[in-house]
Image (cartoon, rainbow, N blue to C red; front, top):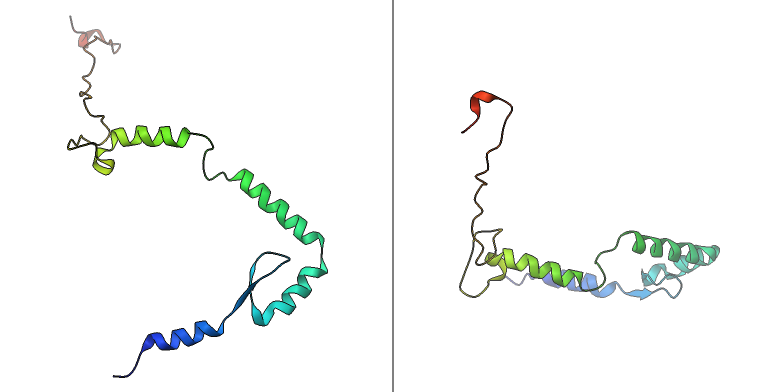
Length: 120
C-alpha cells in the first residue's frame, strides 16, 4: 500500500540535467557535453551549413500565409460552418451561409444530341 509509481519517475527525471549548447543551441545532457563540444568544434563550417539548411527549409515550407489572408479565409469558413463557430442561435446546413437559399437547377433546355429526347 505504500507503493507510489510516480516516486520512481521523479527520482529518474531529477537526475537528468540538460544544458543548452552555446555552439549548436541544442539541449544536451550534462554528462555528454564534453563529447558534444568536441565534435561540434571539429568542423566550424558545420554551424553555417546547418543555419543555411534551416533557413532554406523555412522558406520552402511556409507554415502560415503572411498578411491578413488567414483572417479573411477564417471569416469565410465561419460563415459556412455555423455548427462549429456558431452564429447566434441559428444553424444552417453545412456548406451554406445564413440566409442563403438552396440553388435550383436551371430550367433551360439542353440538347443531348438525340432528336427523340428533345423537349418542345
